[in-house]
Image 1 (cartoon, rainbow, N blue to C red):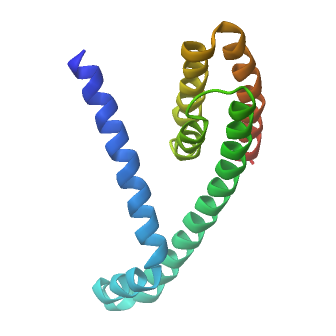
Image 2 (tube, helix red, strand yellow; image 1 turned 45 degrees about the horizontal axis):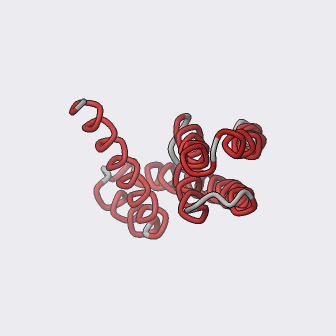
Image 3 (cartoon, rainbow, N blue to C red; image 1 turned 135 degrees about the vertical axis):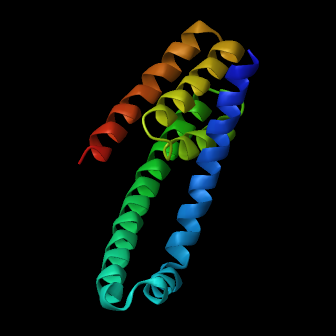
Length: 147
């Protein structure tokens, strides 16, 4: 039991740390590229800086795309949970948004939490409706992310 809680805690900590690092890398990419250039050997400084800038642009595009998809996903699921009168719909929507940044498991776990909250508070039928509402957006997110 303790090891399971430890794994969950470590996973959450790594996800938060990754989000913070990506934010600061994207915000300070020019400073980071300049620092790399200063630390590089003389002959490879230009190449290293060009590679760093390309990497930053790739990460920036990925994060913008993920954020856009996560926002649409979270808004649609929040509206569905509000219509179904599931308590904490806004918080569950925020969980769905954050879960979109965790590869593979984030979308599944955040959707499962929303369905379990609906099951615990509103019963089996509403939980099935919540599952039916969340599933198409999960599939849509998978189709958008695979491109």
